[in-house]
Length: 214
Image 1 (spheres, rainbow, N blue to C red):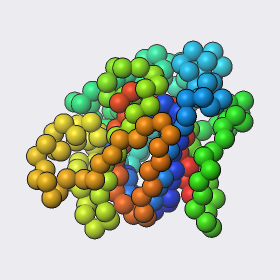
Image 2: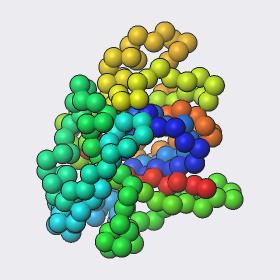
Image 3: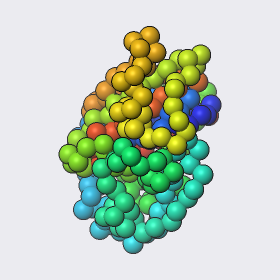
């Protein structure tokens, strides 16, 4: 689970599956299937263009202490697998942030951000690709959200993935301790205020961009 105070916004080109929790202001939007950027984010096109490039992977626990550099092709073909509920967050690697915007410039130049703004802020983008909880494809574009208000800290272990929390902790919660929930699909937008706890679970392999606002 993550804790922070920066505002973030995410665009799912597939459906992003962040592992862990956050405590940030955010809006989230899944792009429409016809976007030019999305067309360049298929598995085949990304591997053809960037397969030999090094990417920096982060662990999926609360603080993402460990970083690992691997060729993008190795990440996609060997590490980008359906999530294992038994795997610890510290042993789960995914590609998010730490982007080389020069090497990936030919892709990012096609990105058109959604027409949503928070007055007085500017955005910094982070690009990522994460595995899904189910082996159902690369771009089904379905993402599940769990949210708690700032004064209601969720019960979680910092080294547990969202999928493990959903399977083991969530069923034991009484109704008054369960989170607010929704599922984001193409064309939908989610906004939540500053300092809200949130966790996400993608139901498929995903390509996404987060916008950090400050």
